[in-house]
Length: 170
Image (cartoon, rainbow, N blue to C red; front, side):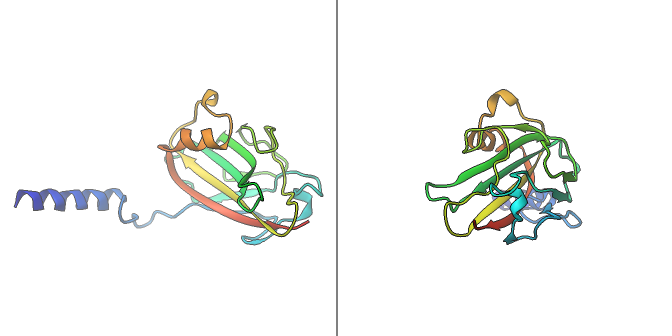
């Protein structure tokens, strides 16, 4: 009998805190761009054959508890494995990242640089995942060198996330 009560309280706790069932009225974060739609082609301006600048991004429904944002842009279709194009963290809680901007601290991408490296596939159409994360704190810059270390550092701090997929073919 006592075990049943504990189980009921545990399920009730998970439900109330939203860990099992999302709380009503809490909207999921969204990521979009005025420059391209989800699963559509990224304009050349934002690629290696254009100006090679980052596109503008719109972030909606950021959790009110968020203290910073992090952004990873990568290409899982690269021949040698996932190619990382941009790693940014400790972005202030903002609803828009402007085109050709540096919204926070940057880490090393697969080009070996700390900046945005636009889509530049060797062949075929590739998918580019723009992933935004709302975090409950800022991260310690000395712990973050690249995508892997950022993912590790933010692992227990993610409140919500969203993604936008762009396509590109040279």
